[in-house]
Amino acid sequence: MEVNDIDAGTATKPQIVYRCKRCRRIVAAQENMVPHKQGEGERCFKWKKRGNSLETDRKPECSSIFVEPLKWMEAVQEGSVEEKLQCLGCKARLGSFNWAGMQCSCGTWVNPAFQLHKSRIDECCT
Image (tube, rainbow, N blue to C red; front, side, top):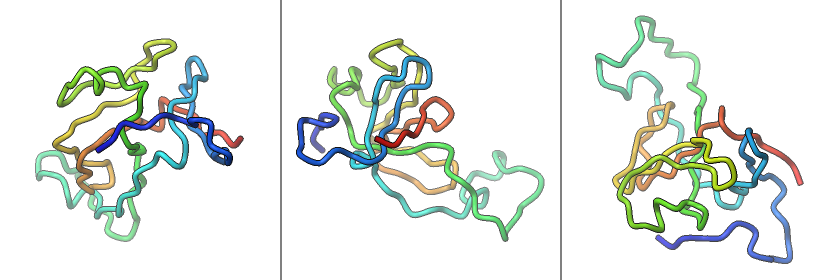
């Protein structure tokens, strides 16, 4: 997989960008997102990690977005296999990555996984 740059001077600007909540630095754009099929929620997790109530009618909402590897991700550039992702501007923890993959909160396994937590980023329109 190739490491990409955010908004590398292309003619068309992305309509949605994701910014660090703390310092407002752009960390990803909609075009950098890696879509995944929504999983079955708690049924996909190990028995010990499940909650007491299993709601089968409600679809779980993803608490993170997954993106392709980007140039600002220093740990990726250094060759790490898995690490936490920190904002370049303020060093706030935005998520994590793992080349072997990780499970989304909706239950789907994403491989490789470059995960940004929605609680740590803002979705903005340009």
